[in-house]
Image (cartoon, rainbow, N blue to C red; front, side, top):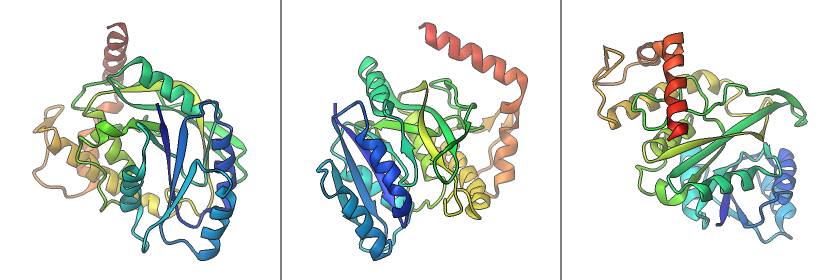
Length: 278
């Protein structure tokens, strides 16, 4: 089974070497890395091209102009030739067993459409700071699941064939396009949590989700959740009516406040345990 690593690159060549080396250390060998540059500076492009030139598993492409993350990630999936795809940011890295762990789960259960694992938050030098402990197995086949609070984060891998049966990537999205993708895939099969730390997430000033865009991402995320509610044909959540049209993030997240309560969390654990026993 071939695995396609999808890398949306934009002016991150300075950090890309760590990503590059982490891929070359993978215990699973049947993989390709698709790099799509989204209008980086010429020197940035040359740095990446020079680094990968002697490894034919790396395929390099460029957008004609800066098109945004939604367009770029959609094109990356189109360019992939593997049955399984997984996004890795060019400034991050994955652990040697990351791809193999994911592939093993897809092979064991054909109903799995998406896998995810733990990730380690790291400093600018990719030195570990703190593990993302919130990642756990989520309940499957639940129309009221919206990845709130976030549990599906990294290292997310998915079946390309199933993706093609969905509404696909929302190319208009510049933030929260990943959450939109996860929810669409969730609606089409089982998701599986791999209880391993397989992804190294670098924190630095240039990170798109770590600067002023973080405020905007909350609004985009709420819109993604609202669209999922409509796509699933839901009229209410926990007895509260879902608005006909999207207005603001507060209105959406207030609908989901109950999912932070202890009763909901207990019932969720019971549901997950029951699903594991089936």
